[in-house]
Every structure is written in structure tokens, then in C-alpha cells.
Length: 217
Image (cartoon, rainbow, N blue to C red; front, side):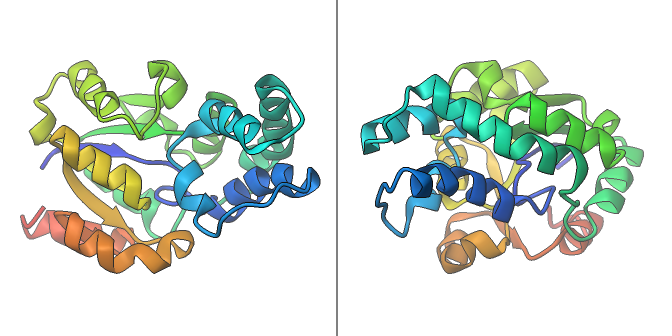
């Protein structure tokens, strides 16, 4: 494979504790109970869809007010603190040097996404850096992967999608993409399901590079 579509949170950067903390903080502050699998539900949705979901859960705010809270809590963390995951920077630089086409598709909005990738020095390695907001839908919709493939200019089956979230991986598979699951502590309990579902599964990007060097991926 030489065309890659990367998730951002939990895949390229170690942001899931912050991402989840921001999301759950709004529920906690409003004393809204939630199921233990709430993280699995909201992670692929993005801020827009999560805000609407929270209104349905009973948060006494409008979706726009909820989004404002999300942004307020998250922007500083993404802009100044969140690190890349292990071996990610070296891996994406090496893939780019080999002539691979690298792209990002994430639920995070651009005010968090872009400054973080730029601070880490890898923003310019990606041909496209997309938020779900750019497609007016979420990663829970198979069509988003087909639309991304069309914009990339490759058949959907010739693109490898990498994500740490089981639901996003499952939906990308349904859309026809090859899928590499990525370990993250936030989705640790789903790793066995992901190994069964995905074409490949890696614990960090050193393993990804080994798979690409040997031609397995």
C-alpha cells in the first residue's frame, strides 16, 4: 500500500485522555449519567454530532453552547501540550520520503487539529488534512471514506485507513478500505475484536514500518 488515511486522536497523537476528558467533563459538570461505553460511541462522531447527542442525553444547553465548551477546554491542550505517539514522527517522515501519499481524517475540528500537527512539524507531510466537518458527516458514515477516496483520487480499496477506534475501523471496512487497527489505551478492551476485524493491527508505528518494509502492508 502506498496511500494512507490516518486518524488523528489516539493514532497519530496521544490525545485520547484529553479528548475523552473534554467530552466527559461537559456531562459531569451537568450531572448527566452515561454508560461505560460512551467513549466508543462518541469518538467517531466529532464535536458537532457529539454536541447534538449530548442534547439528546439531557445536557441543558444548546448544541452550539456545548461545542463552545468543547473548544474552550481543548484548544489549549492541542495547541501546546499533546504529544505525538511513539515512533509516529519518524514513521510518517519515512513514508513520505518513500513517495507515499499521506492523508488525515479525524473527528477533531481544525482549530485543534492543525495547530497540533504544525507544532509537531508534520502537518506539511500530509497531502490532505481533513476534519469530519469538511464532509458534513461523521466517521460513523461509510460514505465519508468513499468521499475521501474520491478526493484522494484512488479507488477506495487501494487506501489503507488507520484508526484506534473499533467503530471507525468497522465502518471503513464496510466502505471498502483496507484497515490497520492501532492500539491505544482508550480502546484496549476492544483490541481482540479489532484484530479480528482489521486487515492488520499494530501496537505502535515501529510495527507499522516493519509491515511496510516487508511488503506485508
